[in-house]
Image (cartoon, rainbow, N blue to C red; front, side):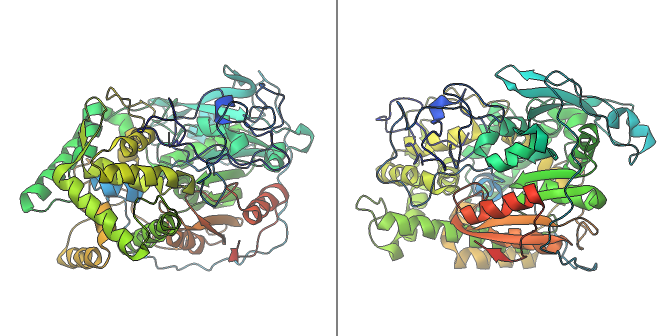
Length: 621
């Protein structure tokens, strides 16, 4: 998980410090992290964000929140040096640039230019027709009857199955269940994936308008866990009228997880020098990536070859019908926006109300993605530096102009000497772990104090604070074990399926050299650029390069102006690439836009999801 809350003594120097814990709208009854059944294991940036506690003290409510007494109870108060914005709940990070900075995983960028050929729909600000109420099954009941037709006859067994919902073991007010989908849609009689589902029923069943399927991104984030913590992710208004339904995508988490990377594989990725200086070092870096890719493909077998977002989108359509919805209502964050766009392009006539938060376009080219990465990273690092140099204890000093150079100098020193730590098996770390941890601290301004302390410690030659941050994100224990739920397990097979292969040419190499010279700190964070899926045995998806989802209902695309993970350029591009895309931007830092501290955004999204009111395209909050 991406967490800034200490798991031990707050005085321990190797623990990330606790983020600001804001008061919730409507009162001071927001639960402290300690009030939750357990902290989420996926990389959410901080908890809680905006929250209204509907449950009694100590009792989980149906949407996944836990009521609590006013104030913070035994929890520590917000630090006096907390960043300027409220703590935010952030979807699992797409982590493209983050992992590029560590292991050179840049195989995921589309190579085809975007050449729209279809007419773009200009959405009206008038409300859309609301979905037809379909009722809310009681706990233990099967799902409502599926919509008739609209799917291939050979898939009827999947589209007509029923979900045996039952109270979840950790929260009986939520419901858990499973469905089955074919591993290979061209062979529906063959092997099957069993998909894990979790539903937080609408809190006002009399006003229920349908299901809202959710995905937190990653790829590899758990939608089941996302639904478990839905009180921290969605407003009471949204939770009152929708069954919030999360699912673990095929091959991930509770859905027949495919674990194709060993602990050794993942440590190799993070320990490899991301900025090789000689041809021999470059060859070694690429050999490591190719070796890991081949190992993952061989160990994962046939199932690992069927984890593409295109196939997950087909699974989502099965869920739509099984849940009894004529159209799919969907909220996708981070890489979940890619999944939502693929669904909308595959099933445009089945799109209901869809929100894509912190987005990237399936049509993005290499050049576009690199431009967005640079813009997102530099805007985020500048925002952190502005905050830091105004503090008396800033690890970078008080000179803003010199701050970037100090970070670059630190990375140079780490490449030569490393940082010492107290973690068994990682007593010395290099640029891989350090760059990754720095980048992940930029996901949310609530992590800036941790980054400041980590940098200060790193300048003295120690890396405990930064390593603790990085290990928490990828769920690596002190003993060197990675959680099987770590989104890294799914990232390689999903990405290699979703994007075409990239090839170095004299022109692309020259452009890379130019960009690295013009943006030296970004270059040190990004590292060697190459295709980590080069050794993957199957080809990736070929982007259409045309307007997406022609004929779909209006799709709301939202993003923060200063997002290091899914930069605003990609969000704006997706809104343009979707025939009915509607853009809404937020003048905020960090990754994750809705329910993260901007009431203007929240009101617009709630109005769209609850009432069907489409915001004006290009609105800025």
